[in-house]
Length: 78
Image (cartoon, rainbow, N blue to C red; front, side, top):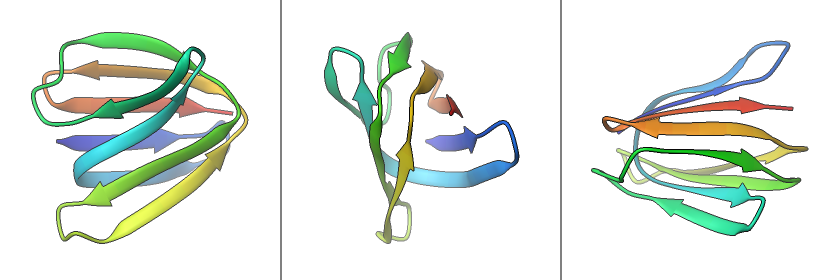
């Protein structure tokens, strides 16, 4: 899957990932390959990713919106 995390100031992350955990407004949301299309709002929390190389990273966000479609995830983060 391809993930982009974009803030108003800059692109925070762009690359291939195997899994993403998002702080959804209604609770934590795990995304894996071939996930159903979804658009969701995010609350304050941590985005956790596992890259294709098995490296893990996390990014704190204050909120935002995420879209998942065709194995591409776009996060517009505050």
